[in-house]
Length: 263
Length: 156
Image (tube, rainbow over all chains, first blue to last red; front, side, top):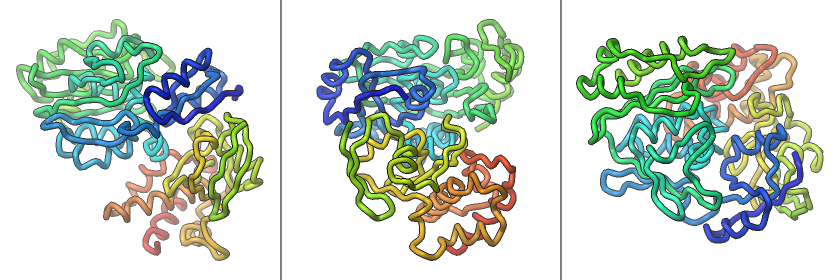
């Protein structure tokens, strides 16, 4: 790796000041993407600001029927949390299926959504559940937050501190894993929310995570796996790579949507 | 350069290291604890797994500088003198062929058994296979590795 300067931030203000001290600094949480990227020389931040030790960045609480998850909470902590299991068991199940045990014990929810990998699991959950991303500066609706491939609404000096997730009436997640990378080849999160059914798809879109109008309309009318059968899922705008072409991904979207609804 | 002090296999160690030093490099090159292996270097194979504050971690994807004050256990420090029940089980069930992945397999497996025991969950063969997804054996010796973990889990 190229040389870098590490700083363990004591507070959000300290983190922002430390980042401003570099030319191309980055915030560091679990490092499951960032350190791997630095090792491949695809990133070379001159300053790394570790935000995991900041007070209040970790842990899960319930605010009435709203789940509040600190940005530095690991996937393993989300998977094992009784609060998550009580309010949104599908999210605990999703967290338990990210990567492998070592990844889950290091990687964080804040890191995953800030990176917005087009095949990551959490962006699908947050978008389908109508979550709110809380930063040091403002609150951002998930619909506004995920802007495209590895792109979010976050400003340079903005730090995610927590996510707020309203309890869904029902929710489910199913993914078809790429067996070598363990990322989603296609993952579909379905949720019954106050605004009707919301369906978010990861792993498939050329612009990253996206919602599907046709699936949402069908599941709003009839929350059942059978309702998915009559929906047209177009392969336009879907990714292609050596593992799957757009037509295969389009088919997987329907298969995973049915599994997600069936639970 | 930053000075870090941490506990490795029960002993306090203090070193000045470049901030970009990976824990795997720190263990192998600074402390000469070469039982921790680096296989893929892309965070996928699990040969580099050690325990940080009691939890399995990929040392090739962990910055040593972030671990000031932490407790690290490597394959060398898993047992004092005798073999750990997991090491005995790998011997007894021939849970290795070339042995390259073995330190990571053993460290990951001890973590698996510890977690399942702490949570009161039953560690089935299926669960072992799922939990070992982050550890790759190039000799594909998985059957005996799974048998070894099942056997050790009963003794730990």
